[in-house]
Image (cartoon, rainbow, N blue to C red; front, top):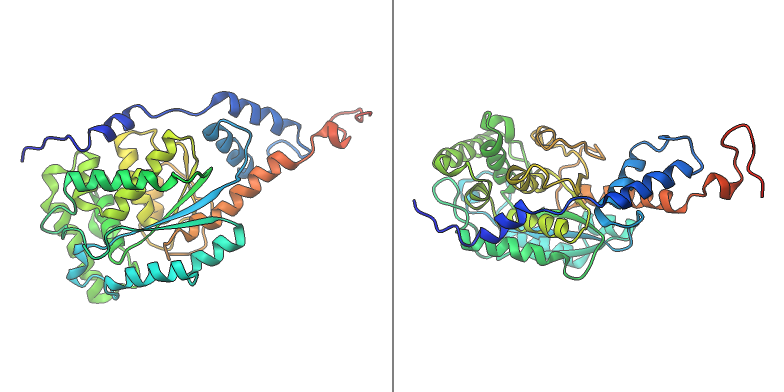
Length: 343
């Protein structure tokens, strides 16, 4: 197959020229941390999170406008009977999000997080990846561009999540294409696939990767051939955040697969991201390890819809508040050596 490559050109340039961290903001955060009323290192990862916020926003650690963005898409591969739910459930859950009735709504209310839902042509499932590409290059690039617009209203911490019946099958296919191994290493129950459903799911992932095997050395080709609209949109959103200096919390197995595409294209592409949680989906921990990350939470969740990332946002907000709100030793008059501070 000959391919012009034109729709992906802008993304290839962006991925080559990613901005790095703000070292001055990072140094300033480290210096302030040394003055706070606590033993050095005693807040553990909360300190690292504060440094990460400073490095990727270019300012003192703060979370003022956190946003959860949920991208919803439907998948042609669902026709193979790989999940107990029909694709119509994707639309029904999007309506549930809009009505405030889902788990993510309760978590956003608890932690004062904004929430946006992006419905990605749910009436038009992607191609069946077992025998055709999920998306054309043009459609995939356009969907990535749409995902980049998710931050248009302004945010300083993005939590990415998804909804899409069949999309753990998609995530497993992406991981198998990127990392190899056996389909069984990457396929789990998702929304409850067991027995014959699980066997069909494994068979679909094997068939898809075999069908596209000659085109999987390019991560963007992996995305368009094996991915889906919500995967492409999440990849675009993560990329836009890097360009705009916005830290990102990645949710579960499917969101991690979207992120993996970017890291495969540029090893530094996820330096502005943290993994919110490790899900109960069996392949997720292995996928996180491939990204060189350590999740913030391990609660056995496997719901998707951004729930793990949103819970982790509470921890990130606390890390920023501790860093900015704690008194320094001199402010509190706390002794740091033999002599007390005098006022």
